[in-house]
Image (cartoon, rainbow, N blue to C red):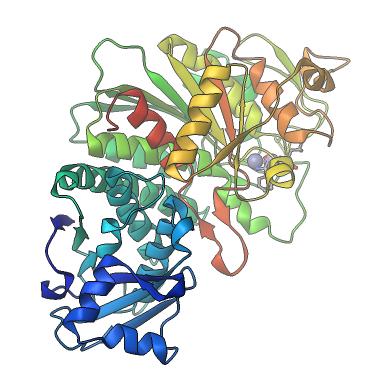
Length: 498
Ligand code: BES
Ligand code: MN
Ligand code: ZN
């Protein structure tokens, strides 16, 4: 992908499409106003005839506009000028690109980056134009036979700037956006792949491929014998019912010298049937997305590597399949975790925490500066927060605030839930140190408390992405979240943000 910035007239650029906007009360954006002048009032004429809308995100694409060198002009509604903020900007750009996605536009010019956008820097506008374009134009066609759906072959994005001094910041934002799109697309691909292809071994191979040819990145894979030797009996209890071998993936990126690393741990359940505590049939296919935590952290690693960030990051993925079988774990079984703590399994469908606790214990050897686990952990989190915010849980106010702030600026938002002692008491067991479930009430939080029992002394946070990692219904598919949030968190940590 190439980027350019321009302060010159939008009408003079021979691109495939130029994006301009109109605000409420028919106020033209600077790019629109310039196109209108060059075309002797074409846009104003169309506004009068009711052919252009100023409603936020409404688009009309015009071709062969007189006096304009671009093949197309996409006019997008921007809504109230007083409310044109970062989110509105993203909505408008997403709508404009969506509306031309079926065209053969490979070079576009976004003139909206020359507008005054409330609360958004030039860096933000460049970065989010690229991020939104990557998100909207993503297609998953690997598994379709025959003629694949055409994707807009975007090769070059231009940005109008009002002030030449903004050009460098804008381009830097675009560069970061490109890296984040790379990570998001990988996370989406892994999430969308079917569970018969995206197995624990497939995740392991993907992690190894990412590291090959990158001097800063190494990947190591532990097998079940290694895990037994380490005492990961909690993790192994989940894989007992399946013939598919479990894998423990460790990736290390060294860009930050002798600094302590940030460790990202991702839940990699490549299919969650519930095990002996079997899930109901309808919608069970969606449990192929139960490795989206793994996809999110591997995707974030792809972003870190693409952007060559000056930071140390380790990724850990416990990868398993959760199936019933004659050797499967049954409710009532008790296992000793790697930490030495014993766990009574009261529900084999609460398997995510069982693999994560051993991964969190393993991660102690890296002496993390911060450790964040990412998991499609509970249906209860979807009930609590819906599909808009990721659940953020931590005993550290500093880390929780850092993550929530990163999510807000990346437009990949998180919301903190409380992890107080009263919830942890729900995990009481009569037979082991504690149980793996704490009842229906506050289910997202009791799951967080369970993990918290294994992270004493660590600067730890837990992200429950059960509601945000994928869409159901007609738009069924992985979202690539929380790659933007985690990437923003790391960009901020290593001082790469302007
Ligand atoms: N992977 C699921 C969580 C999930 C459910 C994510 C629905 C997205 C949509 C997890 O392993 C699970 O089954 N959790 C149980 C926990 C319960 C048994 C305490 C749940 O949420 O029902
Ligand atoms: Mn489950
Ligand atoms: Zn699960």
